[in-house]
Structure formats: structure tokens, C-alpha cells
Amino acid sequence: MSGPKQWLREASALAGSSVETVEVIRDESAGGRNDVRRVGDGERTWILKSYLQSSGNPVAREAAGLVVAGSDLAPRLVGVATDPPVLLMEDLGGGRALSDLLHTEPVSAAAAHEATDAVTGWADTLGRLHQHSWGRREDFVEVLERHGGCGSAFDGRVEPPEAVDQLVEAVGELQSLSVELGLPTSEVLAEQVRAVLEPLTDPADSVLSPGDTCPDNNRLLPGPDGGGGAGVVLLDFEFAAFRHPAWDLAYLQVPWPTCWCSWRLPARVVDQAHRAYAERLGPEAWLAREDAADLLDRAVLAWCLASAGWFLRGAMDGDGPAGGPGGEPAPGRRALLLDRLRQAAALGHAGPSDVAGELREALVGRWGEHELALAPAYADG
Image (cartoon, rainbow, N blue to C red; front, side):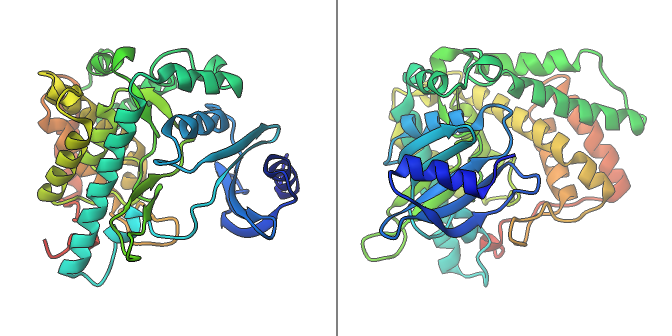
């Protein structure tokens, strides 16, 4: 098994000079997905990311994502090694992420305004990424192939084939609980879920998605006066794929379905962020099509069902928080689960929405209602 000595040796080869660890940013060597550290040669510093799990070829996906995104929207790629799999990228320095502003305390009007600016900046950057990457799917595939990212992990579709399977598996978890609670189940639910996703799988509509745009996977850039407002740079492309842009916009709508900091956002904040995204894309983009609202609803449904399936067993075991990486406050699992089921039920897709509604009603009968709280920055409304 590889370790820091080998990672640093590869990083030195990529940097063209001998580097050492300056700071360990994320040490997940005991069973985690990756190790992230700041390395330097005494004059310059870089970020070194070492991949501890090979499923999905994350090093190839990250490299391809960074290349297609470009240095205005993501860190600049310095180089990649595949044995062991490590990636060296530009060091953007210290700074805050959107997640830091969402859980800012004490609550104040200024904190809420700053958080709203950051959410809007995140959406604007997402729009820039989608606009910039439209029609560049072959560029992404070329980098994937160069670093061994095709094969079983990528078959030429707009996203890894396992993504749909993982959603069906998550819905299967919901159906298993329905059986335990004595609720009716459907033998065709998996097929109904796949039918919901089908309109989102047209390669002609695909753009680059980081795959995990959690509010802590970005860096807020300082403005000219040292404050915020200059923009948002996206981090963490190890799940990058070309897929329909509705997936990423729905990620905001839910919001943040894969992330620990998935509090509710005020409707006005979501609306403002949507406008920023749409304005960045322009009037000829996919949002102007007649089926745009339907496509967005389908992606929201998919995220809600997947998120509910992932949080299900933890919520059944208790109502502890989903848990931030540094012990930050986070929503309770039961509130998250019930909110996802509420949204899925309201979307009215026969089969998946019905299962979500029936399961939610049964769980409320068992636990009582658990409302998902607003992000702490908006606790005063």
C-alpha cells in the first residue's frame, strides 16, 4: 500500500523539484477516499491529492475535470501519476468555503447577506462552468483515456453507468423499509425510477459537472479590498462527469443532497441564485426550453430519493446530526430524511413519489414531524 513517502516522491517528479509536506489538510489514510496535503520546495507550494480508493478512477476524473474547467474556475492541474495515483494542482492558499458562511454564528443581517452573496457566486460559477464546457465532452474523454479512466468506469455515456444503479439501489433501501413498516411496495419501482432519469441521459445536453458540489468543495476568492465578492473557485472533481446540467442546478434546489451541511435555504436565496445561473448561461441555453422545468423536477426527484436512501439507516438508528468534518453543526438525519421524502412526494411522479409519500407518512407517525432547519446564517429568517 502506498503512503506519504511515495506520494511525495511522485509529487517531486511532477513539480520538478524536491517537495516536502507543509500541511496535512485531510488525512484519511485510515479507510478514507483520499489524502490531501499542501507540499512545497521552500519557494513554491502546491496541493497534493492522493487517492486511496480506485473505484471510478477518481484521479483520471479529477484530472479531466480540472483540464476542461480551466484555471479560472478550478485549480490549475500541474500533473498526474497513476502508480500510486496522485494529482498535483495549484495551491489557491487558505480561505473560506461557502459552507463556512452558511453556518456563521452569531446570526446577523450582515452574515445572512454575506452567505447570500456566496450562494449567488456559487451559482454564477456553476453557470460559467456549464457554459464553458458545453460541447467539450470529447476533451473530457480524451483526458480520461490518457490516464486510464475509461474501461469499466466510463463507457462513453454522459456519466458513469453506476450512477443510475446507485440511485436504484438507494430507492431499494426505501422500499425495504416500506416492507418493514408494512407498507405496499411495487415490483416495477426500479423501472419507474429509470424512466424518470431517461430524459436526463442525452449526450447532446451534457456539460461538465464536478459530481459533488457540496458547499465545502469550493474556495471563496477575496475581492480587491480583501473582502468577498470576487468569485468562487470549485474544488474536488474526483467524481467529475459530463451529464445534464439539471443535475447540478437541482443540487441547489434540494439543497446539497450529498453534503453534511444540507440545511434549507430561504426561497428568496434559491431564486436569486437561479437567476444568477440563468443570466450567466444566456437566453439560448437549456433553461429556455419548454421542458426545462420538467427536467429540473426529474433531477430534484432523483437527488431526493438518493439522499433519502443514503440517510435512511442512520435516521432509523437515531436523530444525530449528519456530521461536519470538523465537528461543525449539521442538520439531524431524521429532518433530512423527512424533507427529502416530502419533496419527492410533492413532485407527483407515479411510483417513486407515491412510495416517498407513504413512507414519510409512516415515519412521521413513528417519530413526529421533524422540520429541516434553515442554515444557521438564516436562523432569523
